[in-house]
Image 1 (spheres, rainbow, N blue to C red):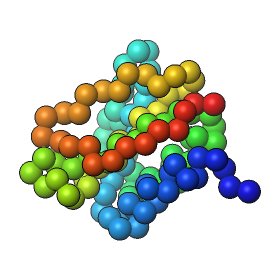
Image 2 (image 1 turned 90 degrees about the vertical axis):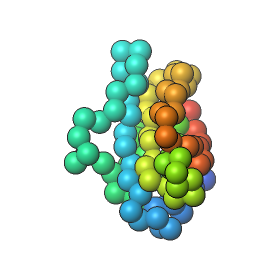
Image 3 (image 1 turned 60 degrees about the vertical axis):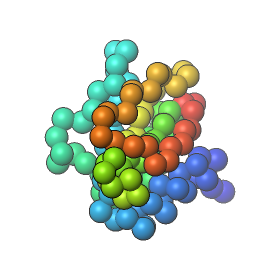
Image 4 (image 1 turned 45 degrees about the horizontal axis):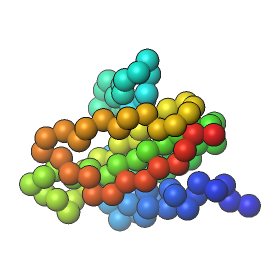
Length: 111
């Protein structure tokens, strides 16, 4: 039996297969604000993004993901933001920074 969130992560699996150079970044909701990873060494390889998210979903985290592209190359995904929180409804999403576009997004609610 597959977990119910597998279908919602399928776009991330396909993205990692088509664009293995894309990287993921975990951004955590802590103390009422979004906290990004500190170092680029902590970026998640494209093919591992969906597996990383799946593990956290299994632990009861909520997830909103966004595939971002630079505004001057709007069809080339560069980074996937994994916005994660521990419980309750989705926290307010951070604004997309200037120079970036959201190509796609999805959400799996916290348990």
